[in-house]
Structures are given as structure tokens and as C-alpha cells.
Length: 387
Image: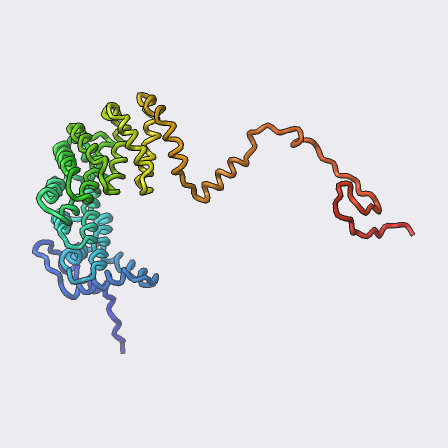
């Protein structure tokens, strides 16, 4: 009599997915949903054996269209689930998009695009962060030109919503400015790029420090490649940037320093009329109590030294800059070891006569009980005496 072999959960689910290829008017089946939840919960387990089992299941499930929908469903709609489980579903969805987006039919691509933007309204910060990663991944695997509604949608959430939703949209926008900068800077995206720059310049003066920091991050990315959308509003950007110079938020201050350094590299003429005041500001920043702010301030000095037209201002400040940098310098154990090795390395120093004078071994005197140099007595017995 044959024994009934237990069904492997993923195999049951695989058959169910093949039977449901419909993309429109989709609703989850409870049995299959339970299996997805089982995989998601197991993925958070620390056991290597269980992780290997999860990996094998995902190899079967990932290529199947409805698995993508189940992952989005858990991330977006199962609010009673643990936040970590919803975030795990979002992470699996991101990996699924990364590997299989090119095989998605148009309806599925639209499904994940719309679902990802909707997730920016979620109450969970972890889920909103996941949404930002999903949006950036979709934009990278496709292109912004193939998702023309994305930038207007994000800007709409930023300008029309408040609180966590606006912050989530701004986080997503900052990811786009970092990951899709060449596209946003291209002439084909000039209108979208200008809209981003104009909005970010406006929000540099927002009440929320996190929003101010994110807006400045986006603009600094634009500045690195001198994106046309920002260059059209450069004077207003510099004006608002100077207004942030005394911001009390540490993250904002760090980003102000980064922006000034990049501006000095790519558009030094914009700063030359204000260079004396900027040097004073950077002296204060280099001495800031927060080490990360001070570190950003330190980046200013080598950049300033590269600007020939700024040498006179730098020379006047050097008596204050050099002691400050030496005082704030911090060394790791490896740094100290290397410095010690550099000090002790005399390979480039000419040898003295005493260093190269030959040394000869002196013959031991038989029966001697003392050394010329007053050393210890020789206690060795002499067994070779004549009888």
C-alpha cells in the first residue's frame, strides 16, 4: 500500500498560480496567501537551515506572475500583520522586480508602479521606506521616460500632502535624484527636472528639518552635474542655501557644507563675492561639536585650495586653519602605526660612517674570567686542557 506523501507547500502554491494567470480584477486566495505568509515569516528566522529552505521556495515562486501580486498585497493591505513581515514582503518584491521586471507584461508593470506610489501614504515608516526603494528600483529597471507620471505624482504628494506622506515622497524623490540623475539631467526630461529643482528650492525653507535636508540632498545631486533644471534657478538656490547656513539641525548643516563644497567646485564664481564670510563659516563648522558636521566642514579646505582665484583669501586664513585642523585631527590605531612607521623609516636618510663601519668578532681568551667591557663572567668549562 502506497503511503500518502505530504504536499510541499510551495508546489501546491505553484500549481495554484499556474491556474490563475488573470491580471485584472485580481483577488488573493486564502490558501495561497497563507503559504506566502509562511514563507515571509520563515524568511525572518535566524536558522541557516530554514533560510536555505526559504531560498529554495523563492526560486520556484519568484518567476510566477501572481507571486508578485501576493507580495504587493501583503505589503499594502495586511495592516494587521507584523510590520517586519510587511517589510519583508516589500523587500522580496524589490528583488523580484530587480530580476524579473523585464518579463512583466504591461499590466503587471502598471500594477507595481501604482501600488508602490500608493504605499507612500502608509502609516508605517518602514513600509514607506520600502516604497521608496521599490520606486527607485522600478525606475532603474525601466526608465523615467517610460514612467512619465512618476515625477508629477511625487511632486503632487510633496506639495499637497503633509507630514509622513510628504516626507515619504521626498525620500523617494531623493533616491531618484541619486539613482536616475543622468535621466533627470537630460534635455528630454528638462520640464520634469526643472519642476524638481523649483520645488526643492522652495522647500529649502520648509518648517520640517527632515524636509529641508531632503530638498538640499536632491539639489546637491543636481549641482554635481550642473543639471539644466537647476542652472535655470541657480541664483535663487544660492540665496536660500545661504539662509540655511545657521540652521540648528545637524543633518541640514551637513548638507549645507556638502552643497557649498560642490558649488565651489562647479560654480566658484557664484561664491567668490562671499568667500571671506564663507571661510569664517567653515572655520566655525570645522570646529562644530558634531563630528560628522565637522568632517563635512573639513572637505571645504582642499577644495578651496584648488581654486587659484581664492588663494589670497585662503592664505590669510591659514594661521587659523592649520592649527584647527591639527587640533581636530583624530587617528585610528592603524593611522598611528603607519605614522610611527613613517617616522622610523630612515631609508631616505644618508647613512653615517658609524652605521656602515664593519664590526669584527674578537677571539675569546682561554681561561679569561672577565670581559674587556666589564660584562658577566664566562661560566663555560674548558674540557680541552692538556693532561
